[in-house]
Image (cartoon, rainbow, N blue to C red; front, top):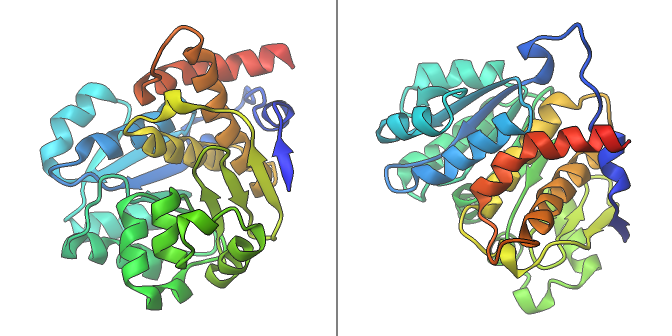
Length: 282
């Protein structure tokens, strides 16, 4: 197991080429946000925009439209009940995030299955939040996960997916075995997040703290990972994921110097300046 250091940021976050446009930095589709949990997918979409994704579409319940356009006007809206529109957006996306605020009802399960059936090998898929619980309830769908899938469970979600009890999740070999069964990268979120990569390498985060124990933190991380994957295509996927996870916690650590609790929205707002500073310090 290798500790992720700050050096990963300089390896991944690079100066943008002068001859570039929105499409250069990726098309991202974020699916989630039912009528009760719109904030989750809005934070994911906002994190993706602030972390540099070129074009972000948020597919959610229409009740969230006003809030979405108020908080992150840079994002495009799609009613996730629009099957034709959703199919087109899935086809056009470089990276798809599904799960934040999605809920666990029949529509949510249908949306996850639609993504699993239509995603191609050229696209990256991040499954987060409610979609992880749905996946654990439909284990026959595990075989539909493409190799470029990234699962971002917290410890209870990992227990549901793997049947590995929280008290036993420090067993690297046991986690790796289940990760290989799933055939996906697993970002196991906890105090000292551990990333089980598709190629069986294991990396660990040594920063972060209790100041990050706030609702929406995982939704924000999912957006950052998605944005990094969408725009930093020149680097190895393993390194891009490690950099995104490190960036998320490094900003939180910086903010915690003057704040008792670090809000996900504060991390989002700090992203552009933090990423610029990485380039300046390189």
